[in-house]
Figure 1: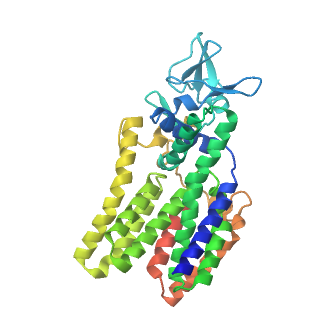
Figure 2 (figure 1 turned 135 degrees about the vertical axis):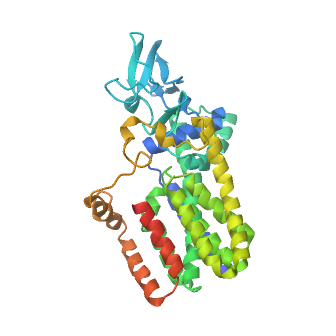
Length: 393
């Protein structure tokens, strides 16, 4: 056991050092979330209005322009943020007049991945990533303020964006590596060497590595779903209510980080029911209740967030996003049937091909075939195939 813990510690430290070492800088995705994190930590509200438009002088010094209902002032003149470049789609829906200048959001704001609701800007993403990043930035900003630092200085912003990402996504990703190792060791019948090789391949030989260095939701979802899966299996050994509750919480957190993960939550719940089926109805009901109790926390959190930002606990942030990203005929405004070449490109193209960037994953296909052929871990394999198919589709 002591050796096992030492291997876990080495894996965690190695992964976290590697993930925290690299920072890919800002982009629309990261900047929108970081603006919301700053708003929560510095102003105690979700609206990111005061953290999306920055001005700089000839020396490169930054200053924030406070946005009110989609407008801000520059040189004493009112500027109205527009969804498009030709000035025909005001963010606030108020037509231009001679007293207002059009200002293209794409060029002037730090991000275009924004939504506008009830007079305020929010990321066009579910809030899970922002919630995960908040503790790190809250601590950083308090320390820097105590030292008299200017939180709007470009160097301070860059430093904080890096450290916030490292101690949220990077930290969660490193923990996910440890969870993966525990699962791999379990499926390898306690053999440490194959589990360690599989874990190293996962952590450093797949896209898990680059996404661990970004303030994106990808790895948070992956780590959360891995943890949920792990806690279900752990509860099978000891029938621990705490493990089931933690499993539900992790799956619920994945769902409020990306809406698609809601289906993953349901698949994990179904997996739990299948695993507990032989134990009888009473055990089934108790297990499902503890799992559901864990889901309640994240569900309540996003309902409160949606009520505050959008006026309804069941509103979807995508409904208020930049019109250029909306597909009116699409499911949830995003998902439409695709031509056959799109799945092939996602698998094999040099642009975003999964097996092009992660050839190691080809071995997974042999693993699934072996699992069904040898009739071992069939339920677990079906769950993993289902989750992979869900996100791919």
